[in-house]
Amino acid sequence: MSVTLLNLKTIRILTLAGLASLFVGCSSNGGSSDSDDTISVDNEALQKEKILKDAKKVMLSLPSPIETAMLIKRAGAKYNEELLNPTTNAANYTTNKSMSIAMGIYGADLSYASIFDQTQTVMKYMATSKKIADALGLLSSIDQNIIKRMESNVNDRDSIIRIISETFMNSNSSLKEDNRPALAALILTGGWIEGLYIATQVTKSSKDKELIDRIVDQRLSFNDMTKLLEQNSDNPDCAQLLASLGPVKSAFDAIKVQTSAIVPVTDKDSKITTLKATSKVTISEEQFKKLKEEALKLRTAIIK
Amino acid sequence: MKRIWSIILLVSALAITSTTTSYAQCKNFAKGVCKPQLEPYIHDGIYNATELSEGESAELFKTFYSGQEYRIAICGDASLPPIEFQILDADRNVLFSNKEANFAKVWDFKLEASQQLIVSIQVQTVDDKASDQVARGCVSVLIGFLNTDK
Image 1 (cartoon, chains in turn purple, orange):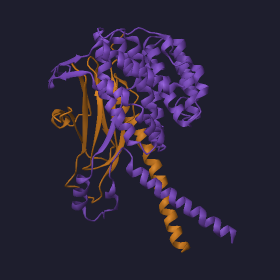
Image 2 (cartoon, rainbow over the protein chains, first blue to last red; image 1 turned 30 degrees about the horizontal axis):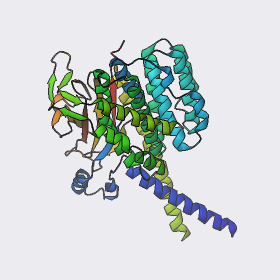
Image 3 (spheres, one colour; image 1 turned 30 degrees about the vertical axis):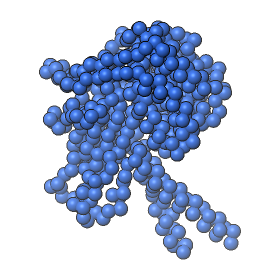
Image 4 (cartoon, chains in turn brown, yellow; image 1 turned 135 degrees about the horizontal axis):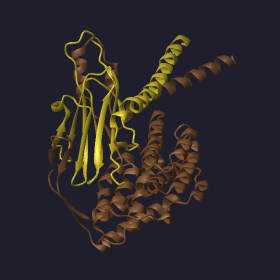
């Protein structure tokens, strides 16, 4: 009797898991609709019509920490090791939320150090990222093979950047594969916040035009980031992080940006298209200080 | 009653397997097939892939920065018809369509001012095919940039 009851219980649990799996699989990528799966295959015209009417799948792609680090270096930023989140803090991160955000933060620090050829720091931060990735169950994201490849290419910046990019791809694809998009969103948000923090800290004043332009550009990806967290707001950690972004949003909203229409021009030989447009940023010293202060507060809160 | 539960169990088990397998297939497809299309550009490390059926569409929103050179690579599973992609600005004006470039899989560009762009993807439909089944497969959108700071 007890065996029968156990089997029925097991069957019910597995059934619920299967139905949940179906639901999660169909609702990934934010607001997509795959209800066409139930349509009879013998009515092709109707099926095609139904598919075409379906809501579009929406993907939001945040800037990678490598890209942000490269942009701020090109804008004239200097390297300052003191800005990095110390690797000794890693022991403090024990929850999924804190570990995911920290993985994003250390990924951004790692990218910043790699762009400035700080090889020892890169190795140290990669080892810390590996520990956190392992703790999050992302065992294959940063494996021993990756560490060895980094050691053998330590003086080749291009190779190091490609290896770091590979680890980012491994972790966010594994999280999506494992139906853990909320953790992927937390990692990306952690990396974005660290990028803004570093950029605002290395900028001395609002007169530093190149860096200021790159910082103000982040308002665009800030919107993508909030949408990404909104997509995952059924997760309390994402909802909490989303709620903490208000002051940074207000600081960005206070800055005036005028952008002209885009005119695409393609070079016949190289086939590269230039999207011609102008952009004018108007920011006061006070507005920059406010943004810098809010970025610092936000970052201080998440590295605790 | 037992028979009903057994059927539901079988369907559920198949659902779990197919969901996990499809995600893994997309991951491997993006890494193995799409990422090499980015060369010599460096992949930004962000994984964007989804399963689409013929006729179905998707959009990717991303901020691109001035002064940076980019390549967008869009790859579809071999079982899918050609994939049309358009690059739109924030007001949805079309800046590029690969339909006018023989369904090219990559587009190289740079910007004079940072912009949020929309990559709009549509899997084409095939009207004169023998089978009545709708093709479905992975579509991956990967972005690369050049390391011009050397």
